[in-house]
Image (cartoon, rainbow, N blue to C red; front, top):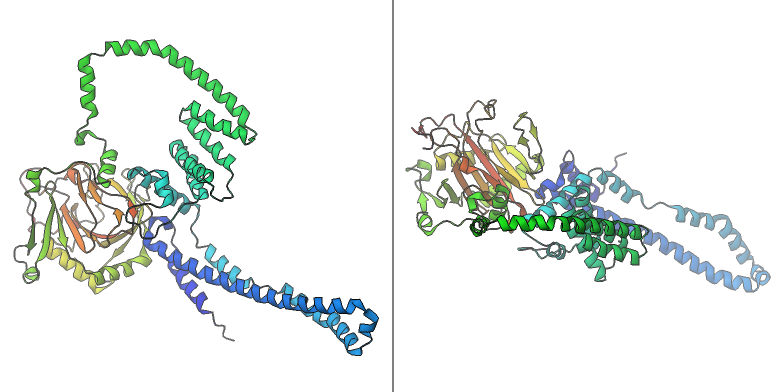
Length: 545
């Protein structure tokens, strides 16, 4: 006997094939789309179950209504009713046969298809790690782009197409995840947002007492006793069992703080007297930090927000756009590429319309089933491992996967004039929720002599980066040391040299991928190596040449 699966089961199996063997869903927005189809199939299965249950209940309801009417009539004159032989026969038949049929109908299990689907799918659902990763991504976006909790909760983000609100439970969940990391600052922000929504009358199963308990403790951990006491008094009003004892403890700690402050006051005044006016002026000057003195993390976040250093008009006037044929390269003579200067030092150029929409879709199609969590090389052990500062998934494509990949490689060689036979394969990356790659170098430094030893092709001389999607908000490529920011533009590519002509590393090329605030970011890159470039890019005579 040949068993045929229903259409929706076949769809489910195809989805699960693409989901199987994959984890870390939150690290790739592109791969998370499969989860939407899986959920859609699950809803279809649930609706089928509801229809089956409604049909069963409708049959039972009709049976009950028929018997209700019959028994009312029969019990008014039982002997007279049963005096009719047909009524007597039907009563015996009902009790002997039909009530048994009804019992079978009531006991009939209509959950089979739905429970089966749910069981199959659940083993491929996102796990606690995914939920925690997605929550931390929201917190990262909040910090990088200086968003308050209410802006995120109400979904008022720049460039959003499908607005989505967070419930009080959602906010509470973010607060709990921050709390588990002893991150009391973000615990306070999200617990306060959850409480705000509850106070505004949002319907929720969430208990205010629980939220206020977390909130008061988070504030206490940040040393703000008086505010912690205010929330603790609310706990007492709500008859929290620990409220009174917590309040006494906070009062004791506040008294200790006041005594310590009183003892410190004279010493502080003495220190202030010793400070000359000149020192104060110097302090004021120092507070206005030069961009180069700002910590890298701060520079990185400033650039992601579109802030930071601005190129002087004089430097800006030296940046041009042009049609470029790379010294009359045969492949570019009839169709030169559009080249646009993005930055002068290091020299970063963008090439416009160098990859078509059809090529982009084909690359994504080839890469999607192969996407795996992106890794970094441990600088101490050299072992590849995942890292919290690189949130994306990547796949590698070779010219054997599709002839189009060879065409793209030839195009990169034609435009750059560099040998790509010794380059690494085309890497395709898709960023996840708040996807980013914090500041890093593409080339191997002197303290990493074995970085690319196994490839046998020398160091990474240059980077070619295709942007395969527009990004609604965020997702820039930034260079913190020099203050450059390059924004994604679908169909374009940016190119820069990682090494000087002398072979020394150009440390100004340290760069990062900013978190994606809204949208889906796809890129692909080609890391070009030193071997094969001896005649294409001759060595320079000085280190920085």
